[in-house]
Amino acid sequence: MTTKRYRTANLGAAELKALPLSPVEGFVLSRIEGELAEEDVVLGTGLDEGTVSAALERLVALGALRCDGSASKPLREASVLTPEERRLVDRLEAARNFGTHYDLLGVDPEAERRAIKAAYYELVAMLHPDRFAGRELGAEARRVQSLFAAVDAAHEVLAHREKRAQYDAQIALRGALHASEPSAQVRSAPIPVVSQAHLEPPISSSAIPTPPSPGAGAVLARKIGRASAPPPPLSSSREPASGPVSAPLSSRSRLEATSQAMAELKRRYEQLAPLARAEKLKALVAQGNVALEEGRGMDALQAFRLAQSIDAEDPAVVRGLARAEALASPEVGKHYAFFAKRAEYADQAGDARRFWEEAAQRAPDDAETQGRAAEALLRLEGDAAVALRCAGRAVLLEPKRAEFRALLGRAYLRQGMLRNAEREAQAAETLDAACTELIDLRRELAAKRPMG
Image (cartoon, rainbow, N blue to C red; front, side, top):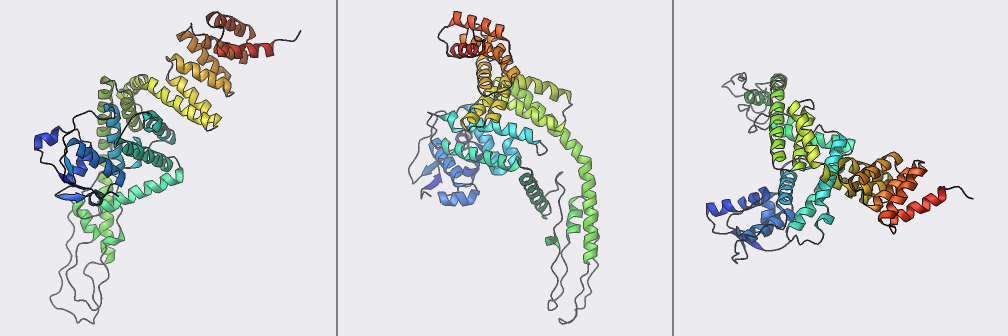
């Protein structure tokens, strides 16, 4: 790791507020006091080296930090990423560092495997190195590459039943341990599990008895507002060190208090859970509507899909999801076309056919996508009816394209409609006699015509 040292620049509050900092960059900046080496910043933030290095370079470029004692002029140029790409990177980086795999993929913890895969495919298409080919990303390149790997790792866990179950158990355990700490606040979910670590250790026979600390039951009871019965007073007389010591509050009493506290906590959770879900649904619908008004189809689609996982029959969710799907369909279609080409390169014909069909369905008004889907389905021995529909749609959108006419003829021929195929061949020849697709169609027609 580099041995550079960083210290804060003498910027005023107004100047700092005006800087276009991401949540991670702001977090890193808040952990730097005096002069620190990059290794110390990594230890102080708990983030990985790539994220910290990219954040430090960005902060130096913006003038918020100084490196090796040299002053850096504030950088006011726009980011090498587009505003939409930067928002995506900032959101994913915050989710990776402070959230769960579900937050990173933007899906609900109850989401089905199909929804998880769809969210994964959309994200990797936005972060894939091919998308940034020919662009000098500088420090942003490491952030994008790191997030691409993180998204892939999250999908690897959530797409497999056993790995996902283990990961959910880890999340529940982490939440339970946090909720059972004396300083933690009671949360609506998940219900904390009391650990035996909260029970006092057995008192040594050689120890002098002292007033016991409250057990886990008393702690949980105080958290949820219940008055816990105070322990019985200790006798003022001390027993000899060698004699037996009896705890004022037995383990059984502690377990009973814990059970009562847990029952009350569960009851309150069951009361508050519907309200919490309603609030979350309302917030997601509002977020989706704002994205729709600003023309951000993918963001709107993600918000309404999360809302759908909470209440699929809510009228606002149904209307918003329909509008978001219509707005985001062209972009989603391009993503599926990208996945289809990748599957073809990997000799995964089944996945390629499925992705091309999905791409055509998502982009019904894009003639290029329809034509490429029809050609791929014919070449990969896909569903002939779907290929015919895609080719027909392409011709309907652009009737003067010879290659689309020839593709339609090939699709007709695959369905056994010889006359229709010949008619499309004549139309394509009128438009462009040297079209490659027309040559293929002529060859297939020659093979179908009877000899002699």
